Structures are given as C-alpha cells and as structure tokens.
Length: 347
Image (cartoon, rainbow, N blue to C red; front, side, top):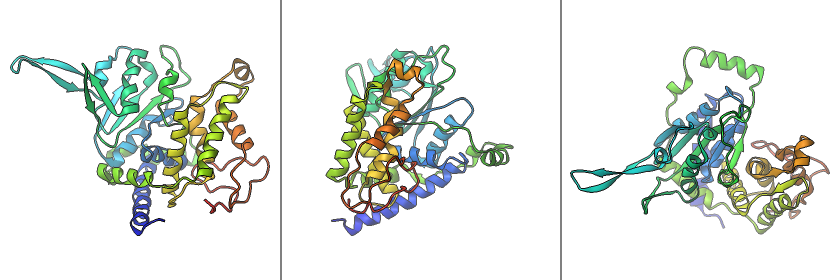
C-alpha cells in the first residue's frame, strides 16, 4: 500500500528531476535519452562510464550534471604519471603535532569527474575500486567515509588506444551503466553553434537542486516496489548472458543488482511507485553490455555486446501477468521512450 507521503515524494522527485533534466539539456542539445540515463544512474546510487569519440561532449555532460546539483565536485585528469595518492589522499607528518595528518585526495567529493580514465596506469585506476564499491577510502589502516551522495562519472575514448590502459573487468563491473553520446543531428549541431558559439553555456548554469534534495530522492527510489516477476525477469536476462555462445564472460550478480536498482530509478522518474519489465528491457543494454566479453569468433563477425544483449532481450520471455505480450521480434523501447506494447499495469 502506497501512503500519501510516498506519493508526494514521487511528485517531488518528478518535479526536481525535470528541472535537472532541463538544466543539463540546455548544455547537451539533442540527447535527452543520454541525459535521462545519467540522472537515472545518479538516483540509483551508481557510477557512469561515458565512452565515445573525442569532441562529442563527454566531459561537458559530466560537468553539466554536476553543475545542476549544488554539491561538491572534483575533476581528475587521468594521466600516465598520476599516482594513487593523488586520488585517495596521503598521510603527512605534522612537525608541530608530532603526528600524521591525513590530506584528502580528489575522490573526497560528491561528484567525481574522471576524465580519460584509461590514460592512467592500472595501479592508479585501482585506487577507485574501494570508493566506487564501498563508498569509503582506507589509508594506512584508517577508513574514511565518502560524502553522500557519491557518484563517479568517468570518460574514455575507445578509438585512440595508444598510451592507454584498458579498464580491467573488475572496474568496468563497478560502473552501473555505460553510455555513448554519439554525434548530434544536423539541427542539434546547428543549435549548438548558436548556444556555444560565443561562450560556454556552463558559465551560466546554476544549480536547481541541493545535495540533500538528491539524498531525499535516492531514499524515494529505494522505496519503489519491484515484484517477484520483475526480479525473476532481471535474473533470467543476466543468466542468459552467462550461457550465450558468443560471450566468454557474462554479467555478474552485481550487474543484476544494478539492473534492478536502475529500473527502480527509471520507474520513479516516470512517476510510478513500481518497476515494470519495460524498465528492465530499456536499461538492459546500458547496464549489461560493458560488462560482457565477446568471444574471438564474435569479434571476427563484428558482433558487439550491445547486439548480443538486444538478442537476449528479444529471446527471454517477458512476464505475462497482466500484460499484452510484444509482437515476435519487436525490439525493446529505447530508454526514455514509452514501450511499444501496452497493458503493463499488472505489476
């Protein structure tokens, strides 16, 4: 039973989220689905990996999302000479106090922007592992809690691989979702020339929400109901990746948890207090694809992980309680758009 207060929270979430979306979209033109996914990851307490070619606005998206919320923001430019202590912090001996004093690193912020994360060595990349999973940092045996909310938004270029260190599977698995911005449409690119031509729109961007507002919205997302049927559907999708002949590494149990959390956030953004199979379908590719490793034969056939996930979504039966099944072969609805089949209120 949903109480009046919970319904009010959902209304507040939709209003606040709408303001943040409009704020970010004023900077990132023509990509509403990408902006919406970024906000979904924030409300689902996840981390976002933005992977695309240079110049399409990866860092701009991360900065715009951070600037839309009044919270602490730190940007880390990953380079080959970056040290783990530059990220986590270091203990410095204080001559006056005759004791060591901890100097926090760049990770001690509510939104951490990691630019070109694959430019740093694996040793430096691993400095983020504990903070991304446990939201804490351990230095010299002392554990320090990170602020709430906490989100890592990392960017990387998948084309120019000289001098880079590909992210290990353990770190890719800690990112809730991966998104590619892609090139804008001609109309959006023309509008970008007008908006960005004289000055950066980030200079005029003002926060429309506070950090404590985001914490309240995250609490609301946690209360979104996920039925047994929807949970089983998520488990079946993830299990199918582990048995697919074109994948040598399937998705982890952490991926199942991230998929359900993201579905709850998507449902809350849509003003619903319950998640639907449509939410799972729409988020399957962004949440699962970057965790999968295709076989050598699949790579020779130029099969991508996204194509495999789309095939699995089409193949795994959708829970049929209170809904009209999709037509055979119909692809899932793109994220942020209404589903192409109806009758999903049975959940």
